[in-house]
Length: 286
Image 1 (cartoon, rainbow, N blue to C red):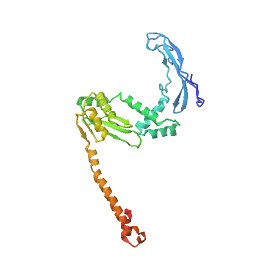
Image 2 (cartoon, rainbow, N blue to C red):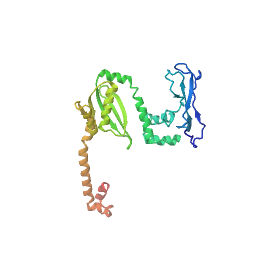
Image 3 (cartoon, helix red, strand yellow):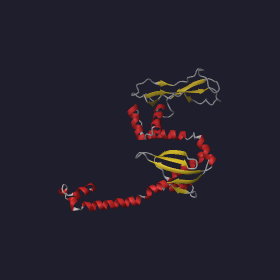
């Protein structure tokens, strides 16, 4: 049996079957009986760690669904989770409501609540919440996409903070709806291909075309997914990058001019600074 850690000073919390009907099965009205307790486990809350001993009960009716032992759960504890429900809620609020990255959330949990939580745990909580939210697809969006009968998918990823996951947004250009948003540590072709398949299953409509930038992983993902569908490149990204070769040459020319000007004697010989107007003219370049 696990022992209560010495650093937990608060009184041990015991969970019990709490019902005004007493130990009566809510399904078949038979008697409930106590089976065992788990010996206790540590739960980290916003007010500090607590030790929770969970009692298990079962229905005496062999045919009842509650015949197998079940826990009388602590209201703030989550099964097989170390952090309490309110810690989860605070992490989710920081990340999804206030748009804070994982590292900042870790710092705030410690600064505000003295809760030591790792970046990986914060990420896992957010991903768990995100996956759970997928079960509740917006019915209005679902209806519009299914009425259209097809999806012209646009996708793009942005990394607001260096070394943090990128936010990828997948939208339908025909209805103008965002179909899916996902935080991704990396976006290889296989991952994007799986998301394309997920979107088709989620909305019961085929993806008939894709619009994106010319990122290699996206190009390869479309080839893996449906190589025969049109894959158009976003005009914004195209026009945004079209000047890059010119800018590169311009930058190179600027370096050559700067090097040439610095070699002029009027620049190298700073003692003429007060008397030579050309020095003052070229000095900002150096």
